[in-house]
Image (tube, rainbow, N blue to C red; front, top):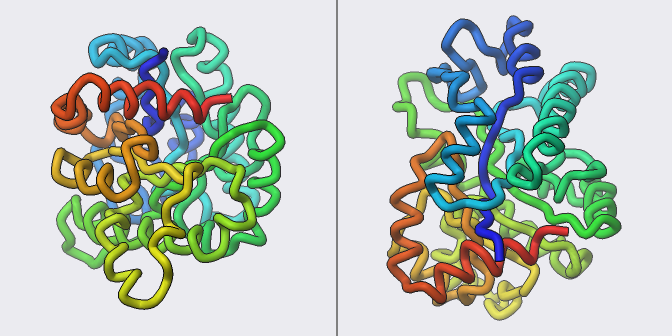
Length: 288
């Protein structure tokens, strides 16, 4: 069975060109990527397809599922601007998917899943309006795709360190998205698989607090709700496994944003059978 990484990001040349044409974030100027959270170094080599395939080989990954990260802020742009960027990314990625013989799979950027893609990536804020998300969920149901929920990101206080958004905004957004799905989405779309990035921002750590406020925690345990491992180590993964069961955890790396090695070492430290479930069996079930 294939080793699948459900959480990678890849910016095709067409999308990079679209960002370089822009004068406002999200944009690329020289070697700097400007998004709502601030300015970050940008290395085109991290998005070179041959280099990415070589990195997959080194890590032992058979299939990487790539998405356009909502932290770019494209979901909040005017419709015309958003459509231009989404089209540039999806069309460029579709070419890469076709050319890589199954090594790269893709998620649609916020809209209904398109032919040849395996699901849709939405920002965590999208779960605040489940009715508006209903057409996307219907398309996923029809095409046996999965919903990948990723932090939305946003502005951070001036002078914040580069990691501020990832440790404050992202985790809070993902916990809120997970609880929103539990309270309003899970019963309506029980057959749509959902993957929450970064262990839903540590949502498993909040279930005891949830129980103290009345809801039955058992309602949080659902076979079609999954959590990706990106950026976490042994202690967090162990708690998530104990809370939800190893069958609900899937491997995600967040390459090229995060070094995947520590998380992969932690997963392998649980033993071969757990590693196989998290990296192979569980994520493979998500793919059409």
